[in-house]
Length: 59
Image (cartoon, rainbow, N blue to C red; front, side, top):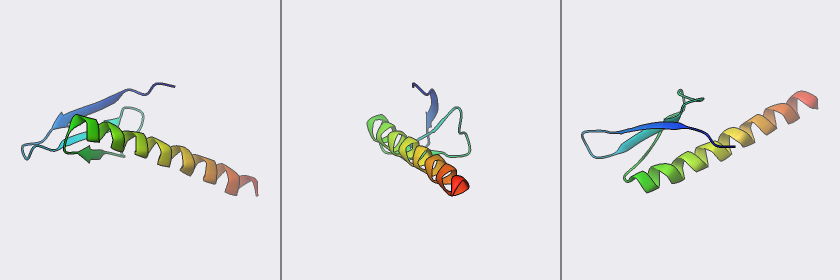
């Protein structure tokens, strides 16, 4: 699954970004590469959170 994301560079040089499907969950990085790593980590957290919610709901 490929997710699209939006990003921009702040005046202080940091890159801010979020997945288009999850605009309420922004993350940041000092470089675009670091931002992409943070987005991947965010995706993993969102997926894990979804799993735990489903698991708790079933139990």
